[in-house]
Image (cartoon, rainbow, N blue to C red):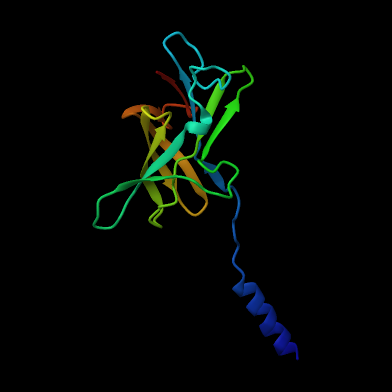
Length: 167
């Protein structure tokens, strides 16, 4: 009986590995503010000139193996923000659009992946947001953001992922 207890104890001690689930990081939100040349808030839903949140669409570039890429609309029926677009009023009463890049097409490999999304602000105004995102089993972190092909954020030089776009 002593041997069984000893073998069982060794099995438990040797079979257990320390699992480090510490520090899961999900930092994949782009914050965008839109202003016109006069400095007016183009996301102020009470103004007639503003982009209406309800009319905005979020699309992404879907990759197909050995086929042409196509634009697909982002819409998750059961999500709090089905379009992955959230309009928030900041403490200074300006409006900020929280944009969540579509990263569900990760190829399963750790590293930096580039994703292309499109933001349709209305029927005629569409912008391109491209993000380089580091992904591993514990982290999803935006490293760079290009807005309409202009680099707006680089984590080596910038601290905040906040973009102000003049329209």
